Length: 325
Image 1 (cartoon, one colour):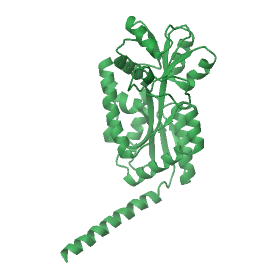
Image 2: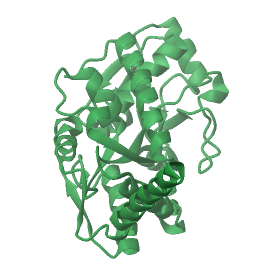
Image 3: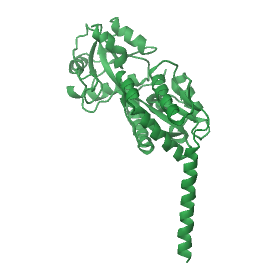
Image 4: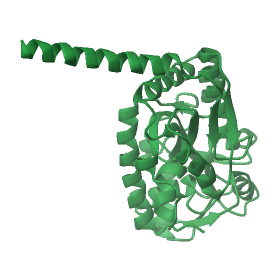
């Protein structure tokens, strides 16, 4: 009798918990949701966030309001999200800079990635390309590696800044290829590309969308995508993997997080609808056209990925001696 009562009580508790979780989801969102983008308006992060926000708004009939809070290497926006209530009404578009780089290069970071955030899902991956001025001697990544080994530390490459994801991609290239390059930081991707177009710096590591128009006119030459395989949207461009750099993956990723402690049912609902939005033909086509690979996962899988990426990036930063300016 006692055993049957225990089973009955346990069943009632489970049913009540499930009902409560369902109620949390069906009542969500009952007011506008803030989607913090820790970058200024108009950039690629803004494009991704606004695309997803529109799909979530269409599905739930509620506003998902973009809140651009750029500055301090994404830490201003991330700090706001870390201090928000754990109710799912504040989302954060977090990049690899926010998650994996900042805690390694800054002495004081106002948030703790694992403690303060609940992972929802990765969104897109942005593979970089290595592009060169037309006069540069190397015509491929294999040529570049051979030239760099012959002239250690003399070949310069530009990036949007010290400790940027582009810089980390360059440092990883040096480590894996056993070469030494000269890093030249600029204040943004635009100035870095301009320097290469003008012949001031022979190489730049940047996104395909910014460099492709200039490659078509012959003002620059794309040596390779920083990836294992060729990109399906640009099959004529070689990959670093096919030139012998197996396992090299240079790029960055964007993701969606919310405050730690947010009910799992709400996190799960956001995960489901974000993934559904990214799968719609219009959003998929728009993101693919500017060089994004859509990559999503469950919250648990994403949490594991975050820990792995943080460890991988920490190793690269430590070995290369990257420090924030």
